[in-house]
Length: 242
Image (cartoon, rainbow, N blue to C red; front, top):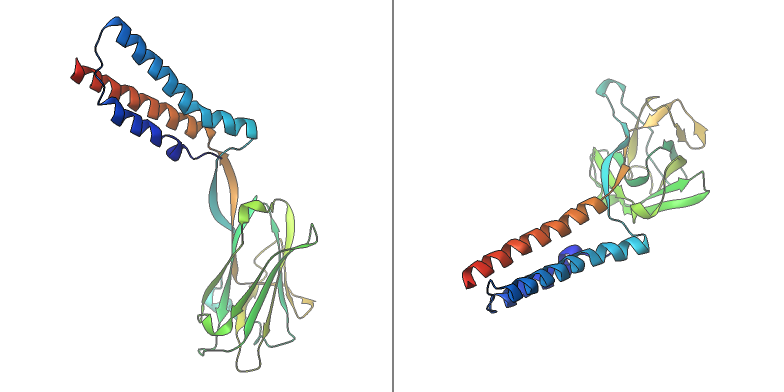
């Protein structure tokens, strides 16, 4: 897709050159100015025409929470220390076009741990891995959300799909982390602890883009704005040179 700002830079250069020209208000010069303005109009619309033929349109993405499971103080409970061989899973359903990130609430028992945290996001509907992460446990903060950003989110359609977040570690007792769970708060998925489905959910947030908007109209307005400002600039130049 063509960048309109870069595309219109030559117009600025053109105005600089135009200042050096002597333009008078006689019939011949007015026709010349009209021809120049026509050329500028065509020039402004070329990128929109090319993108239209290629089927490329700018989009605006609006970020919001797909899932937000909180942990009230009175209901918070951890899933036990994660060690090698354990697996924690959370299923969820997406009615968003794209997924942007996953945020897991981590507890480190007030210490600096050693090992590796493994997180995978699996697309159950299409039976494929959506994304994967490996994080050094020593870099994870205590009692805070760990944000895992999805690579190239707008290239993977997530609408009407079921997912599973799988979490495991390569660490030993007294040297690892844990996660928080709350009573069944989310109606479209469940927490699975070591293969057993529970009536709880992980404390987490899943961020996504629910709506996308075609911004082609905005690009057209940009072109007309540039054209309008160019006309004003030429009018000022003509007035000064007359």
